[in-house]
Length: 221
Ligand SMILES: Nc1ncnc2c1ncn2[C@@H]1O[C@H](COP(=O)(O)OP(=O)(O)OP(=O)(O)O)[C@@H](O)[C@H]1O
Ligand SMILES: [Mg+2]
Image (tube, rainbow, N blue to C red; front, side, top):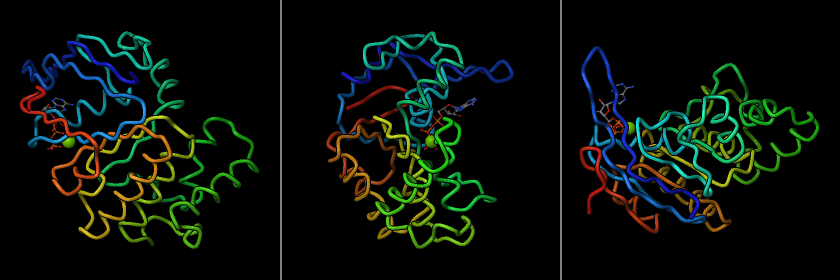
């Protein structure tokens, strides 16, 4: 099992008010699975994604990634795990506006001190995969929503992570473009990636092999 959560809880404490965002979550995801996480607003979906993606730590309980217990890791250790294993796609694309498509996509490799000529080659390869070679020198403001999300997907996979996490990746796109984005995830899944997608939309969830429903921070039926 690639991901295993056991008795996992997340409590936010803001100004003395406690919010139990995740309560006693037990969850396993196999390597190569394609999972959708659904549930109403405020049910804990993004909180769960942040923990799965090592952007945040649980308040209690365990997280095993590839059988390694990582719940106690500090920020530096978590960011190492994140760089190596995890790619993120967000609803609002989160591209850097000042950088071109090519620069946005190559950024994770630059952080990992990959030589520049190798970066160029990989970026061009991956932009071909998401059909964006012709937009390489554009900045995000000069792209359609679908093109921006394809850029974000290219950036998320350039390090070849085993896990791809997407939080409402089609939330800002119309139905047809949303389907295009989900077809890319399906293709990546066929290529062996483990994919977790948060969505409110049943049609989007139907691309996944398994649906997990969150309700008030708990996994339901
Ligand atoms: N940083 C934070 N500090 C305090 N409370 C938070 C924080 N982030 C989330 N929460 C609370 O935790 C609960 C779960 O939030 P979360 O963002 O995980 O929900 P969600 O299912 O992603 O909702 P949505 O569908 O609206 O994105 C909510 O009640 C929210 O108010
Ligand atoms: Mg959310």
